[in-house]
Length: 404
Ligand code: F0G
Image 1 (cartoon, rainbow, N blue to C red):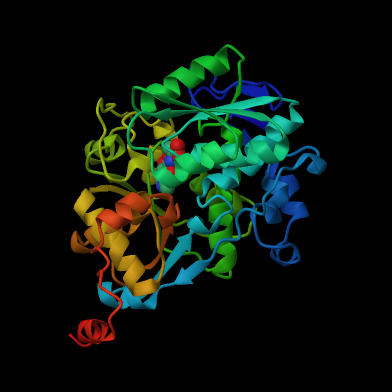
Image 2: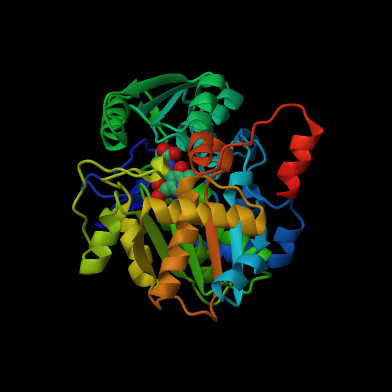
């Protein structure tokens, strides 16, 4: 097991506490895949409970006794026939990451990231966050007995996420700035060794998140989807899931790879802009803005990995408006009973747009990933809904209303 630069190829031991290569580029964790291939089997996986740790051989842990877990992963993969019918699709699934312990996919990253901190005997962990990362890190560090510092952007962090970070006992600092600025600041703290950084620039966190890809294969009985669609913010998750699929292929579990399709909000779409130009670099956006506050990010750190995932898989990147996001959020709730936060609904909004654009074929087998629970952002849901009908305690009035 090593850390390796995705650009210059320089290798580092896994116990080196670094976040980027000396050349400035991103790192990834790599394994001896021949060794993994000998140790694993589909039947072997099935003997363990579904979840992140079912795929232990692919995870960067030296001493399993150090694992910090809240039973993350193993989220439902719903077959969504009502929505498929509405959209004229053959086979549509939703992988609902909102069912994780703190209500988002971040828990998969944090079980591995905080376990790593445990193995390194680190006492203080930290992150910048639009909300979910901080909620998750706060929970896992509480469970591990570690101190946690989180930096949040000023203004509109969704209420549920803020409540979680505060309640799990993290030191919560809200800056007068956006996520990108918060991340820059926390990276400086990490460079000064004030904390162990658990943003997705940390390649160990992404190792946990790649298990979304593993579970999709597992839950579909190893019959891969043609396409996976997900929201993109700091661009770690799409990179992680792509790595997961590639590792399953390399170790003989699957034969094909799905098209990775990333969706951003119109007000925060540097990766979509790069994709439309066929570019491998992004132009950061100064003032990202969207109702999907989770993905209100103008300078995604993982863009090189994300663009590689999209280009190598022959996938796509598209943006959707706030109105399309809210419409999709409602449609998913009303057709399938799945309540997700706005950023998550970007995957459904993107699917709808890509069908219209004839990028998505109606015969494709599609998995949309919904990344966070709807309860995270109750304000957004209430704003998008009709007010309750208020009446006196009077049976006649009640009867009139339900009949009318
Ligand atoms: N969906 C939700 C619900 C998120 O919270 C995030 C990221 C994303 C999608 C995008 O994932 O960054 O890997 O591309 N939230 C981070 C946070 C930035 O701080 O909670 P990504």
